[in-house]
Length: 417
Image 1 (cartoon, one colour):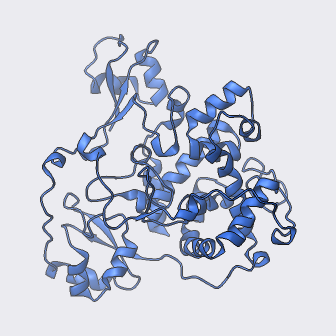
Image 2 (tube, one colour):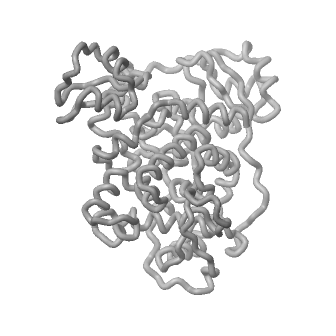
Image 3 (cartoon, one colour):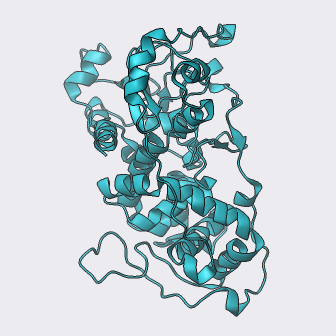
């Protein structure tokens, strides 16, 4: 638990500034939250990285749309609805702490999960159960409703190795741009979108930002799927204020219209598994110890010298893309099974250093820092940029070697590292 709090505290200090950006940047989806005006420092070769062998395609059932059928009444037990959000903690505890409305669309999704893909949905519930204590602890740190964890069920079935055709990756299905924006390391050796803890911290920060922007969880969830820009533009064009309003228009995609009811349906079943006949057998929680590794070590070599099964190391360290600790980190925190850290630490010196194969020629110039650039827009002043990104004016001037207050449209400014 102390390790978890340390990770949360550390990532919370990173100055990522999404809310200020999204008021004026068109963003297509949470999987594409890097705009042309905010430019992460990466080479084309890094952008073209292909999924590695440890990833698996997103399960087909996660992308299927339920057929438009009349839901049998007996398949949906009566459920109370709630419109409570995190803004009203003083009221009596409702059935759910995110808005849940049992309308025909939600009923259709409940029937789909409970009947059409029942066995698959049960696997998702079991998989989430392994990580749920960690996720709920992180969400509580950000004052997020605990029921919001079920968003991960409809994103990936909480599969750290899942990736989509659009190259969204991990349990929360981050694209590279959004992951980098929220402090996740993504490079040839490490992809923290797959780390159950770090990716959950990033998702919690992103969801908190979305809620702070839109003020309701249905809109925040819709923006997680469609992107802040699309939801904001839909609200503006429709002169609307709620997700229900824009879901009746053609201003958002059908996928997004179904996404929010889908989360509500998953929440209903996950909170009431006994009513739907889903197993509630105890599941071993995701636990581990850490060992600090100062050089690249391969999982197989660690397994050979310590007796820890190779598959256990892969399971506990899904963020390591090459089944080895990275060569550019002299204090990497490798996760090992509970009760084995002392043994591993004693044997570290005996484990041979792993030599990575040379990177492809086009990838050798990939930069591993997280410098971000801002493209100046018409009407911008240095003071406005300073306030927008919460970067001290003096820091902006120093980083960009500016002696005067004038900046020109199209100019690139360093706004953070």
